[in-house]
Length: 228
Image 1 (cartoon, rainbow, N blue to C red):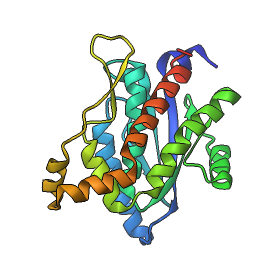
Image 2 (tube, rainbow, N blue to C red):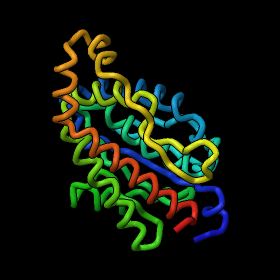
Image 3 (cartoon, one colour):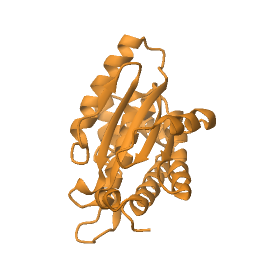
């Protein structure tokens, strides 16, 4: 593990479509480009450059966690949420993710494991135990994200529009949950009854999702930024 990689919190990621959701290659490519533009804008604080979309249904990007205003913990939270945001925006299109330490470029071993084990995200280039810990932390998140319908994904994005976790102001490295939007606001935006929103979100197990994002954020920060 290099001192430079630890100090900067540099990570390289790639996503590859494994289920196009019934769209044609041209439509899929355009959708990836639109989503990449929107996500690049929202998470520009940690991105080293906008998401790069490749032909054939994949995109790649690099982040520096410690570029976030509150440092590596906030950067970790933003990265976890960014991966979830990409997945939610693309539903029903599904992607596998590979996460490498530093400026890595050999994503193939991670994607091979993701395909064989049907994993949402695979960590690679860390210590062996950390590779497995990162992969495991995202596994539960992936089960929920891949199990949501397009409507559930829309409601969850609306509910958590301001994020899932954030660094408590003046606390150093303490996380807090970000307040959810009111169900009635979401219902008004989608022109449905509040009961429809509540039932949909309960079925999506949003509370479990929030805790899983918290856990993945904390673990990623400890591993990448050296707080373990």
